[in-house]
Length: 508
Image 1 (cartoon, one colour):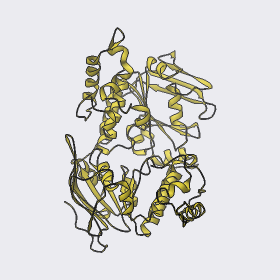
Image 2: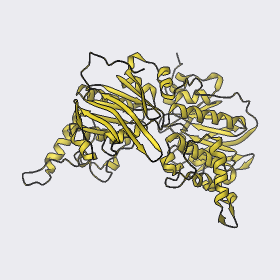
Image 3: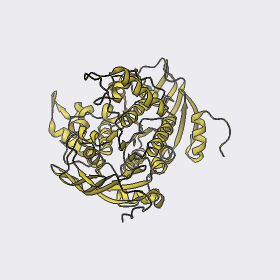
Image 4: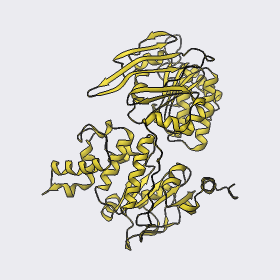
């Protein structure tokens, strides 16, 4: 049940009333409502496909609602274009900043509304001065003349916030803003959010990370299957209740780890070294085992996995698979030997956006689905159908563009394409990054099922609950080296964090 609004706060500055939006064959939003209040953060939560992205595009003028009303200070408004949304003081900061790498910081901040001289030319001196003033007020150590492409992801987010301040935005939408940030950068972003609240901005905060939601949000709104199912104050709810509202059921087994006794050693890595990324990496991987790799940003975990998959070349060390040399020369060589890699960036490195689902799944297995050197679509479809059904892929049809799928379903396609090659070792790099809790549970269940069938699984994750819930053993990396190794029975969150951060002393 939606909760009554808090009478102690002012009326909402932005309201959506019975807004609906449909696409061919899909009703993305069905008479939804939303209220944003000045000086408060409203968390918008829901599974992938719940309608959050469609809502953001309506608020930023990219999509037009089929019906319903958008009100600003109680008066109906229209947002026919992205520029119209900016004129109304609505701006968005996305997971991947929508800025221009080749322009300077100052140019990005004032793009489209640069200060002008009396004869209508851009006043470059004033532009740089005002950009510098904004950045200093935020405590951002960024020079306004720097090229955006030379900044870190965190600093690009700071530029996006400065842009929001430059247009005197009243409503700031933050769509998964912490997905690519380190712990320190996330804390800095939270300070900025507090600053925006104190300045009276209304903030819509979209995140799959419940710890962040409970840290920054004053209110919540829950979407499920295109409908608004609940809203209220954060102080009146709990994580378990939010999960139940999101998925319509209780998700008690987010980490459904099956008890498996690992078998013989399948993969052995000794002294693996890269000139700049990692050094002296040694470990064994056994049949049916899920081996977790944990560490802070920059620890060298992903770089190690990419070396095992043949993406990068090493300078020293050996790899053996079933006792045979298996140091991959390139990814094709790794796949031929039975080692596959599901990358962290599934959109750019895992799936081929623009191709249909069935071609994505069959792509690494064309030798098995072709006849006499010619593609055989029936075989491709049969292969894709097999793994789509096994992974419970949610899609209208197998010829649907993989780019139109939710994050969780894209991940299932990427996993399916590699399972179709029948590997011995599967490396999952941040397998549930950016996907909702229901899809996480499905990926975890399938991961456990693969291990139970005898597949060797390496899981790289920055999420402690995932590492502790799914791993048989955990290797912690720090600054390109192995800093510690722990059995499942001895896993302790504080110990893992201390080891990853290089903090001496015993856990409390």
